[in-house]
Image (cartoon, rainbow, N blue to C red; front, side, top):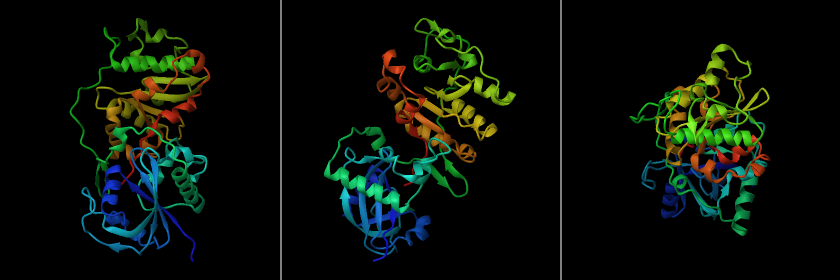
Length: 367
């Protein structure tokens, strides 16, 4: 028997349920994937990845060569490039294996140029794994079946369905909402949620022993009776390590964490705005300094997760090199409020790298 190959098979929770309801014997891919699907052979394994929650949920064994069929299985798309399959094992969303738990075993997590570069692997399926990666995922799924570990699932993430419209040779196109423009004033009488999250990030950074910076035009904002510019470890000026254009962009980023002269994290906070102000600053930074390795985070309410992803993947940002989605991560408000220790005596032991566990990739997983 020839050596088995391992392939990625992307599902949303909806398409996975539809697959099972149809008998779990046929999986399908988009029309443009036909040539790749023809490379998949009987005996190969399809490793099923649940988008939105980013977990491995099942292993399928291929039982036929590729065939073309437009019979209805899925409601949202035809997925006519098809394979007959046999279900080897399946988990629930709660017991499925989070992809990041295997980061130490999978090659696409190693030697990343950008924090979210691993997400490129999940931009479409089928995609062939390196044999060692495929075996590691299969072993993890089988182990999770033998010894299930229940993990809470964010219902909003579970219901994630790609909403971008894809146009040939253009990229991702989204429909912007009509929303109010962000007001960036020298001070406000009542703190907004934006201001509160800004203060939270500044205090968190200073409690970690880092120097902090607040956007030059936000320094006079008052939160909890204290001017942001007067918070502990606040820098009065940034190190002059950039050219004049880059320096102006960096000075207007909502929050920076610094270790000596190194910027270790940059945050843009969006609440009631259409997200563009922060994204434009980030994209300008990537455009003028493409080799810059500052971790960029877009902080926004949980319910704006899909909007953030769609906007980060707009054509104007996807054509940057690197793409903005590769260097920018999403941090939901709830993660900062609920998952970050409150006691300074504990926080001081944190390192900026803990943000990797709180943040989510902005790469859109194509299904």
